[in-house]
Image (cartoon, helix red, strand yellow):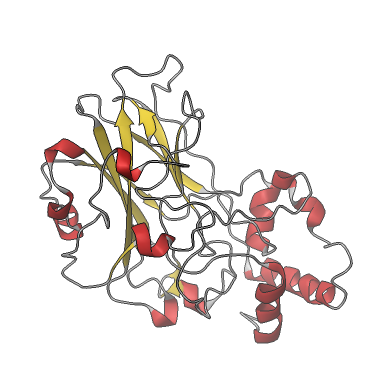
Length: 311
């Protein structure tokens, strides 16, 4: 019953609420909260919640093999890029931050969908996070090629991590999300990075680069990267309660087996015959207190929905 047509299409259409392909930084926080910031940090030139131009404004698709395209879509750094609802996040050199991104269905969607598997099995690609003080180099000089060649002497690789952090999951009713929510996971994926202690200047830019090349199953592209940038307003001193050491990585929650997936899909099929009834798996959603929580559409995409990612 691997990726059965009728049940799986009905499942996606009836019980899931995900956006489509692409990815970006959703927010930045300290590893222990917001500190003195009123809100999480957002990507440069983030739109308002009801603005449907997020993909146009700050997400870069890099699909040419030479990678010779600016890593940051927008050259604006400073107050003009962080006005209004999303002020710049403030942090000091030496402080640990969480960089977060949504799974956008690439993790919680059916783990046996051939469109989300490469030849080695399930794969979501790799996230690379680079950082540098803005004063050191102009944005149009920082291409993805420069970053990947290791020739960028103005900044540093802060983290390299799997797209799936092992516990994250976009809210929905696939078994992957149900299992992760039941075990205390769910929510955005994240990784901890530290602003180097010796950094100086007014602004520190973190570049998010997701390598999804050759990972999109039967429709895999030779080159497929997505980048976005977030600017941190540097403070002189760390906060009194800032984390001084890297936080431990969470224990991964395994993906469902084929047998588990098929059993859950059968339950979903039965429920779809009478969807006015409570969902049999609702009590397992412990991360939601047993209640269905509508996902946050802070960044609705502007492009047309893809058939493969119509979650």
